[in-house]
Image 1 (spheres, rainbow, N blue to C red):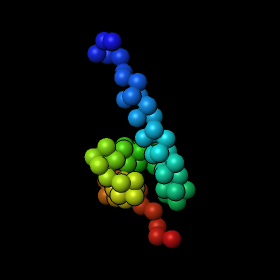
Image 2 (cartoon, helix red, strand yellow):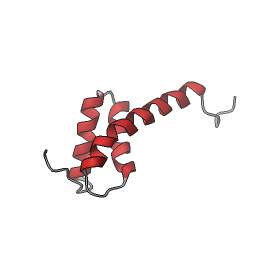
Image 3 (tube, rainbow, N blue to C red):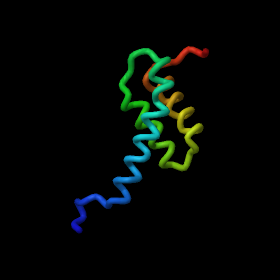
Length: 76
């Protein structure tokens, strides 16, 4: 296998993380003003890859969107 071909396990792990991210982004998407989904996804995925739990990563992504992108969800 060449260095440019992805490892099957890496692809599977990334696919799983993307699926998890898409499911958890739904709550933010429903309550947030218009935004670029990839910003929330990126913040969430970086937090998860850094060892955060899914709950911690949701909080990190929400904070990123508020602090960096000025996309704020009003409290329920």
